Structure formats: structure tokens, C-alpha cells
Length: 244
Image (cartoon, rainbow, N blue to C red; front, side, top):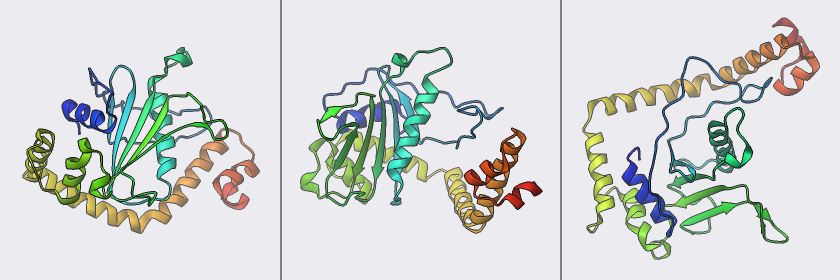
């Protein structure tokens, strides 16, 4: 999906009537320094699958193959990440453009057999839109075919079977790119490395969390925060904090 034309086509199929004239993929941020989003707090870094802007909005497309209970919270954080990225020091809030987070899921997160779940904030009693310009879209590619909008039917079908049916040029382009990638040796090496890293991650997950807590506690301690406050936010005991 790092192809501008494919991104444009997909967005316009998901949201009929929305026309995108220009797509720009931002350059990856510098890795020389780590930025703290809010002074005194250490923010979780995030890597977005496909981030692009079209002049009127910022958009993030995420491919999701494993069902996670915290998917909406990920969406919330991704919206925040895009806002931080587009509003620089000295800028005013009206400069914030709408943000769209789109999860393409190979499962039905809400179990209602709907093809598209489209969310925005509003007053639940008055049906009054909040108007902050944040939209989250969750696609269910396992939806019964008869319920899928025509523009997305072939796309959903391809994600489910990896086979092309009919003569949709959009699906043909995607399939050709997939075929090209599957034939590249470096992709196979990357997947093998990813599997190895997954195993290592599973083994060291608990230890890593403890190390992260201690690292955060050290930084908070260096900033002069009270041990009781540090214990509250890290889960470490006072004794553990005093030994750091």
C-alpha cells in the first residue's frame, strides 16, 4: 500500500464520494534522538503501517490479522500520533486536519457481520457530532459477500482467498505486486527473521516489561519525583526504587 494510486483507489472505495487529488507519504522521522511528546512523560513510540496525507487530511491504513481486545485503544493512540506529527511548535489548533485510522481486519471485531464499522465522536443523547475531525474505520473482510458494498467486494474476496476473480484492474495491480514481493529473496529472509524475533519476544516479554518499568523509574527519579509517586505509576515497590 505504499503505492499512491492503490491508496487513492482503496480510500475512494471505502468512502464513496470522497475524491483524493494528491497523496504524499511523509519522510520517516530522524532516529538520531527520541522525542518526548509531553515534558516529563515518556511516550510509547509507534510505527504506522501506511501513513499518508492528501492535502485535506492525514490517513493511516493498518492491516490486522490477529484479533486484539484493545484495537480501539490502538486507534486512539494512532490518532494522537498523527496529531503530534502535524501540529508543530507555534502552530494553532485550527491547523489540525482530519485524521482517519483504517483497520483492514481479517476477522469481525464486533461480531455483527457488517463490512464496515465507521466511528466518529458525538453526544449520545443529542446525536450531536463532537466535530474534532477524528474518524476510525474498521473493515471486516470476512463479512458475507452479499452485504459487502460492490466497490469492496473483489478486494475483500482477494484478501480471503489470495486469488483474483473477474477483471478488476485494482485487484490485478495488488496481485501483481504480491507476486513480485513473494518472489524476492530478501522478503523470505525478513519473514524468517520476523519469526525468530517473535519467539525471542515471547520468551523475553516479562523480563522486558520489568526492565522498562525500572528504566522509567530511573528517569522519574532523576527528575526528582517522590518514590511514592514513582511506585504508583510504575508498579515497583519503594524498596526496588530506592535500589535504582
